Length: 239
Ligand SMILES: [Zn+2]
Ligand SMILES: [Zn+2]
Image (cartoon, rainbow, N blue to C red; front, side, top):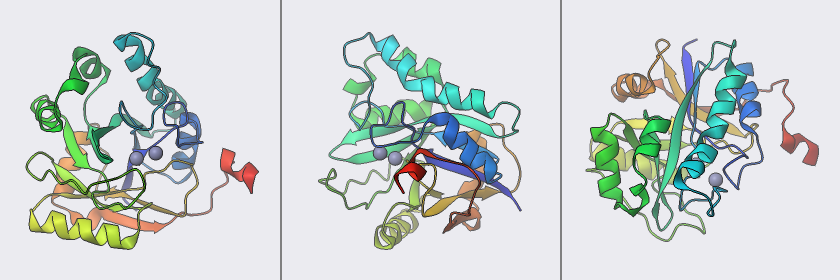
């Protein structure tokens, strides 16, 4: 077995649409033997509970807390936790930002005034990566299919929460523009019907190094039913 990475996770501390706390997501992915996970909660303009009436710095501290909780929960497990965020470009278009840290978020208090193209340019100039999440998703909160092939490092061509049609369109898009392909689960609840991700050849200290290696290995992507695990998640109580 290789080294599995999850690139797209939401937690209940910051994402309004998630019912699963960060520490629980860690428990779930550790039980499945993952090498690493990225916490990518909804960010400003997205479905987030970031408070409006506090300073920018307090907003960012609030935002990164689940990542810190996840890191803490993963201590001693051998599983790596990476910080990411799901940037909302407007109209429902969303992009995963990976490879940057809390200092980067704090450095630019005016970042939400930048256009999406400016935002991605700054992210990439500073060593981060931009992956468009579910570009062809059909949902009530999305009014436009918006593609920015010249401003991203890759495309989430398999989102385990999407319809197969949406994913097939994303594969076609990535191939036509020769963009690296990635797979992820968009896990909001800990236990999900199926999981998608990247199964790498080894462990990577840097998520950017892993993503760059995966760019030339589309065969590393997987999408499969979630295995049974002996972890209790909040959703179990509703059943
Ligand atoms: Zn969500
Ligand atoms: Zn998401």
